[in-house]
Image 1 (cartoon, helix red, strand yellow):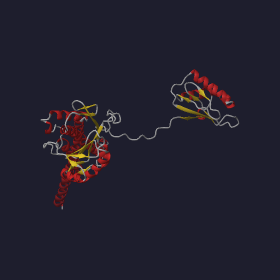
Image 2 (tube, one colour; image 1 turned 180 degrees about the vertical axis):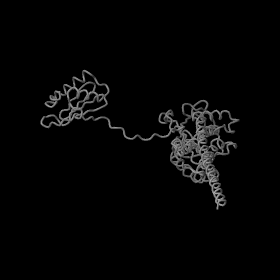
Image 3 (tube, helix red, strand yellow; image 1 turned 135 degrees about the horizontal axis):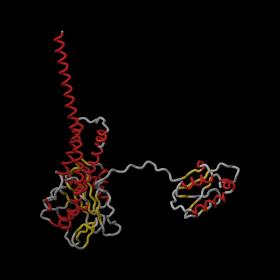
Image 4 (spheres, helix red, strand yellow; image 1 turned 180 degrees about the horizontal axis):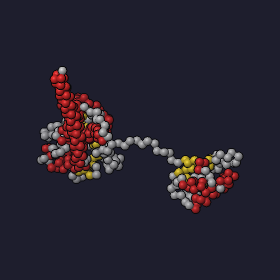
Length: 403
C-alpha cells in the first residue's frame, strides 16, 4: 500500500476511506500528518486525511485532513504495510502548559450564583457591605460626613449606640432612599447608593479608620445582596431581601439595621478568615521541616510573636465580636431577631466560626509544639554548659592535686 501511495494520492485516500468505514472512530481527538521524502513523485510534501462522522473530505491541492481516535490506528497501518513509524508525524493537542496554581480553599465563597440578577426586576435594588478597618472613629466621621453634604439620621434607638446612620441624596434607584450604616467595628453597609457616592464615602472614611485593611482585600471580601419592596412580612428568600412595603419609614430602617448587622458580621469574619489564611501560610512549612528532620529556623521571639498574633485573632473573633451570641439589641425585638438570625444562617456565620476556631486550635497546638521544642533545646543547652563547667572544674582540681 505504501508503494501505491507513492504513485498516487487518490488510492491512499480510497484505502483510508475503506478502513474508516469498516472500523469507525468515534473519539475524534488527534490529527495526523504523513510525511514523505520521495521528491520524484507527485505526492505533496504533507498528506493527511480528515474523518468527520466516518467520511473523508478531500482538500483540492495539498492536504487531506484526517482526525482519528488514537495513535493505535497508525501503528497498525505502519505494521501491516511495512512503513516505518518514524515517517509519521503526529499533530495532536498541544501539551498542557503549567497550570495556574489553584487558590487556597476558602471558608467563604465571595460570589453566590443563586443571587437573582438585578436586570430581571427593575424594582430590585442593591445592598453592599464592606469591612475597611478594625474600628471607626464615629464622632469625627459624623462631623466630616455632615460637612461633606450628608445628613445624619437619628431614627435608631439608644441601645444601638455603636452605629452611625447617614442618608445619601444620590440614590441608585428611585424606589427607595439611600442609607449608609457605619458600625464601630469597622464595617459600612450601603443601601440603594450609587457607585460614585460609595467611592466618595469610602474616601472620606479613610481618614477615620483605625488599622485599615488592604484596599484590594476590602473590595474582594465584600457582601452584595439584592432587595426590593413586596407585600407581606419582611423576609430573606433565595438570597433576596423582601421588605414589607406597608411599614413606616422608621420600621423599615430598623429592619435594614438587622440585615446590616448580619452583613457586618459576615464581612468582618471574612477579613479575619483572610488573616488566618496568611497566618497558616506562614507556618505551613514547619510540619514538613519536622517531618524531614530539618532544623527549624525559628527563634524564641519569632514563636512568641506567632503566639501573640494567634491569640489576638482568637480574642477578636470569640470575645470582641457578636459572632458567638445574639446581641442584646434583639432580646426584646423578636421580629428583628428573626431577620438577623435568618441572614446569619444564609451567610453561614455559625459554620464559618466553627471552622475558623478549629483552624485556630490546630495552629495553637503547632505553636505550642514549637515553643516546647525551643524550651527543650534551651534546657539541653544549659545542661551541656553545666556539664562542661563541671568538667573544667574537675580538671583544675586534678591538676592542682597532681602538680
